[in-house]
Amino acid sequence: MNESFVLRDMQVYTERGRSALRDFLASQGLRYENDADYAVGVYDDDDVLLACGCCCGAVLKNFAVAENARGQNILGRLLSHLTGWQFQRGNSRLLVFTTPENKGFFLRSGFFIVEETAATVLLENRQNGVERFAEETLPPNGADVDSACVVMNCNPFTLGHRHLVEYAAARSALLHVFLVEEDRSIFPFAIRKRLLSEGTADIPNVRVYGGGPYIISSATFPTYFLKEVNQAADVWAELDLTLFARRIAPLFHISRRYVGEEPYCILTRKYNEAMRQILPRYGLSVESIPRLRAGSKAVSASAVREILARQGACSSLRELVPESTLRFLESEEAAPVLMKLRKTGNGGSMWFEKRTKEEISCLN
Amino acid sequence: MLELKKPAVAGTLESSDIQISMAPNPGKGIEIELDSVVKMQFGDSILATVRRLLEEFEIAEARISLNDKGAIDAVIAARMQTVICRAAEIGYNWAKEDPHAR
Image (spheres, rainbow over the protein chains, first blue to last red):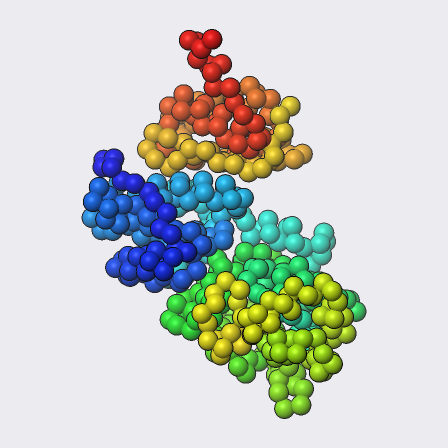
């Protein structure tokens, strides 16, 4: 065994580090999603990069080992290192995103499969994670009736969201609303959740939960947060939706998913399209409803952020958001969020600044 | 009784080592998951070492996951000591095991 490998931080916070990583992954036929917050490389005596692995939040991914360096358990070194590093920064519930070829290695290393598709495998370091998520999420004797579901980001909660929830709730015994939990939107999760709960409090058959790592998260759908439309997006949408249909829906007794029509964002539209293809395969139906309109435009969270960025909390928001959201926006508590919005001048992602305006405007 | 404060990990996935992760398990006692390349031959002995260390440190509640790649007893014990100290956020007097230390 070659003992002279060294592991080194690849410094993805520098352009040089990122391009080294991108080039290496490309040489291995892999695509770099540009969202790693930490990457480690394995180098030989001559400082040649032989292997790499990345972290993005609690997700481990982009594992690659050069052909000539295989068979030496380099993957083991990478995984040991990244695991230790994650625990140190407080992430002990880890997810791994990898290709079907590498599945066996992770299964032998304390990971369990969450979901797999032809192109991708998602694993996590605890058994029955999805079942435990449902157990922790569902109220006791909560959901034994035929239920429907809506998944939203609510950045922030608008009358459009309200319209969708109202519509779905009126047609269901119980409606589960999963809120995207990943904190990668302008409005923090805690605030998005509060505004959603307040804005739907008067509808008795609505339950609001965080989607955890299983529903549109960095693990199931990283490009959602990057808003990049490419071939990879299809792969991710398939993973996210298959996981939803096969694992989440049965536990929550969900038979229908409601979704708002998407007039602006190509990525969301493609996701919705994939939904209509994949969910029926597992006996779930999908109903798409037209967006609520205010005047000539569809009510959207991006329109709200646009106004907030330009004019701050003002009366023209009244036709876009419910009373509860408006109250928050006018409160002192909203100041940091509004400041952030004014600074970025759009409703964009906090992590990735080099997005075009068009791309950003669809971060709903 | 020693109380665990946070999840921790020690050891690696290299051959002849063991990776042990440990997390607080309030109200649920000791739960151990063992995955080993030599589980058939040495599973019981690995678990015995793990339990011995838990007793030594007086740990009554913990969720432990063992990923063994053929570690010998001394390595298992050392990894256990390390992961316990990390999870309980305590220091360990390594010198107490050194017969030559004064």
